[in-house]
Length: 149
Image 1 (cartoon, one colour):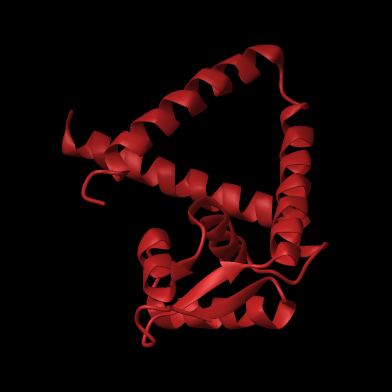
Image 2: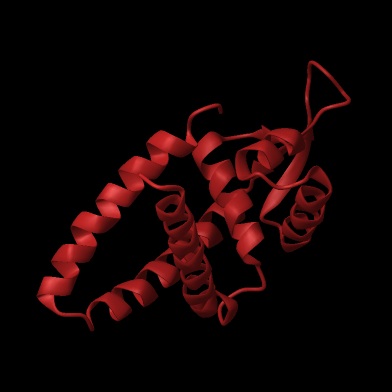
């Protein structure tokens, strides 16, 4: 594969990411004050359980100062709590609250329903192509992007 092909793939993926973020965050903004970054943090906590601020930053590839800002907003909303690590008081862990989990699931449902409505507007042929393509992209990206984690 030529370097120009790699550049086109990178551009396409960035364009897809940008469009998805814009499209998926729009229905969420009408229902909650949680930012997309907050939703990513809540999702990471749901998948991984209690995490340190450093681990959240690593998992989401965002700087620790930004994680702190996002987590502070989620604490103000009652969606997460800080917990001291019993083995090392210097480490502050973050945990999703019951209210946070409930709201995360509700936001995920709103986003999912909005996306499903958009997908229902395409032809069956386009949906089949998108089905196969999205599965291939997911599989390849999981393989490629998980290297070195």
